[in-house]
Length: 320
Length: 286
Image 1 (cartoon, rainbow over the protein chains, first blue to last red):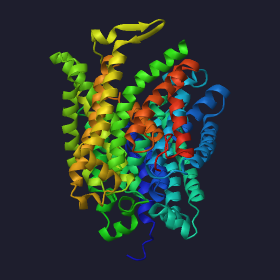
Image 2: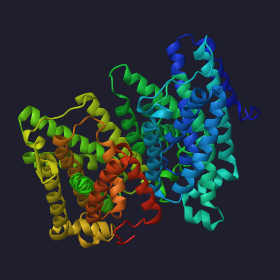
Image 3: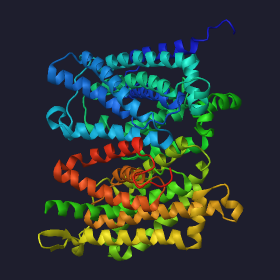
Image 4: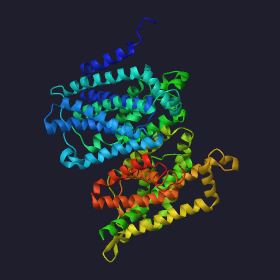
């Protein structure tokens, strides 16, 4: 037992995931798994800032939208290859994160959450009103990152490495000094400062990779559904979804966002088959249930309670 | 003259903003709770007012107190059932909980009322009156007047009644208040109910001059935050002034620049105030 390497569940998970397009023949099921993967990426990216550093960002949709729009507009307006556009999205997301982060991280608690919403809303309104450049509120077609045939399979195989990359980053953060510094900030910013952590710097550092992966997920999402519009890739619902996925699975854990994405996607899909407009009720109900009954997330059901206290509990219990 | 018209239009809208934001300021000041569900409760107010008029013929300008009471009771229920459980927790969980309540209410409204836009046709609200070259819709004037009266009533209630004193005591110090014989739980429930009733009544008053759908409340949640920050977090009078100010700022932006950038101006003001004058524009305690 002890000889089995520690990473075997991870290897098994990704092997199964990668093989899925080979044995899943139903296009609908594959689309569902694709969405689980993309939203897991989103949740993991959010988890770096929201989980480890404990900063409740409700403006992550800004980076999601930047990724989607940068890819679309650079392809459409300058004639770039869409993959170059994806790269551009990541670069713009870093610049936006530097700007937004340096302003919003000066604030704490609810003020920070509100400021991130405000920043994302400013971007949404600007995009919505620059009709000449962005097609305004109507939105436009996003370019395809892959060529037919077998689009579903190709997109899926494009998304899994993205999940792998953010998974590797999360694993590193989870075990690194950087991760401990972030958790120190989450527990108590003043105490963290007293032991030599520079919160402004660490928080900004945590936002950069978070923004990049959010932007990449945004590009991939927009290309898959071949559409960008302020109501789809710049709506505050995406920000809430990112937070919900991480919290639902278990904030500041490696597997939490993946679990959260599976639970959220499946629950809302099941309800969707019965009623037309249910996803909001489902999101709302899940948020309420998680906050009140399961602040450690679904993952805490699998782990010992003591371990949970140490690893994830403090988000709910300690005043920052 | 356009300038004067824009200013007065801003004041009229701002009066309703003042009522909405007073409710949020009350909840924040007393309970230290940032209520992300504020706009969702406002939305419920618009639907009460809508069905009251369509099904029962109840004019919202006369029967708004009933809708206020209904929302007060509903909010007390929500407090007892859900909000109470996060009162000791940090703002991270509080925000997620109220956001969850908001999503659930909006989602339920979509299920029950449908996603369509709805409007009522109240003859008095559509009339236009004017002085010289200035023109006003009577609906705006009525909504403004009722909102102002209610904000004044709220401040008087807080200043003069025994319950108001208890609420202010809890706002000052949550842990000492019970030593003075104040039932903090009860005061919190009543505060939450009152704050929500403000939002709901404002919704009922907005319906005759606006329209409604399940997502109509979202911008008002954000506007209330902007106003509450402008007025100094937790100050009801500050929020009332902030509401008027935001209404005027929006109208000026619409006149001098473009209608659609009014929202951006809100958020820019918001960020600037948060960064450079976090105690609010009207001073007071930080």
